[in-house]
Length: 348
Image (cartoon, rainbow, N blue to C red; front, side, top):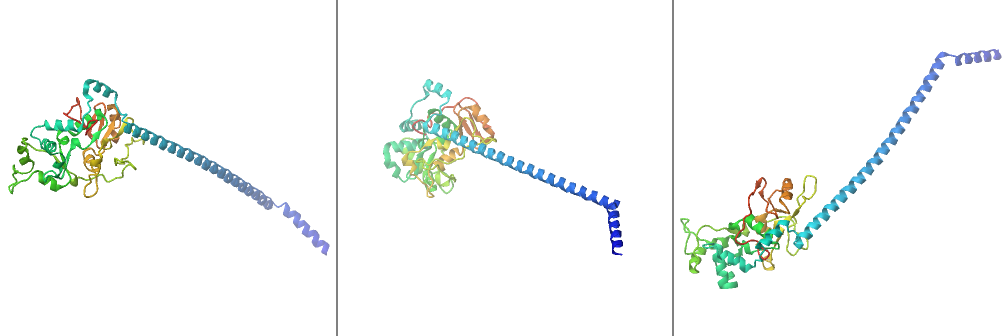
């Protein structure tokens, strides 16, 4: 009986192996295994590709950072070269040599500048210069003039003859002859009016002029340092002249424009006595007077350089061969004009 049951069971097992459903199930299982293996292979390949792409991306980023660093170093070197050239006075244009051969490269002292101012008859600046010549340093203590620092043309120097004339032309005669006072009280002292608003011709400069043989007529410009909005940025580190740390102009590609020399406000030398003149808020001549007059006026070697830099000129520009942009979109064309004096190699 036991043997019969065993034979019956073996027969059943034999039949089960040949069962079509079991065969189909086995094939499906193999197919699923193949799919799993294929998917795993794809995942492995994808991961390897992603790793390769990531490594390539890191290499590209590394090269981009190197390029960025090298470009920054190049810009810094270019700027350093420009700064050194400016400090050494090596920004003469080719046309400057021609101008100098035409006997225009005179060396103008402060006395020469004052002499030129004195030739301007009936001028307020002429009266003050006459007073200084007669009384010397004592003129600084007179009630009328104790708050007066001087005339714009005598308060600074430019170490380049050609640039001096260009800056003078840029400002114009009226501004060059402007009187500079420290406070509003000093401005009030120069001219007094009655209750009806009429000028008191016996007081202030109007009264002083005839008494020294220099009657005054017409308007005159007075600049009050106390009333100017000073430069609010940083200064060049360890610079005895306290030059302004202005950011150099940049073209859309990030480069400094070719031919850019510097900012006019930093090309003016202020003597030690005037460097110590500070407003009540602690601001000096460069960040008040000269920054107000020139702001961020840019200086270029040539007109062509200046015109190429137009996209990054915001407060005007001049070129050493006579080009001039007054402000954005306003160009000064025609022949150059020479004033009776200028911001010369000796005096502004």
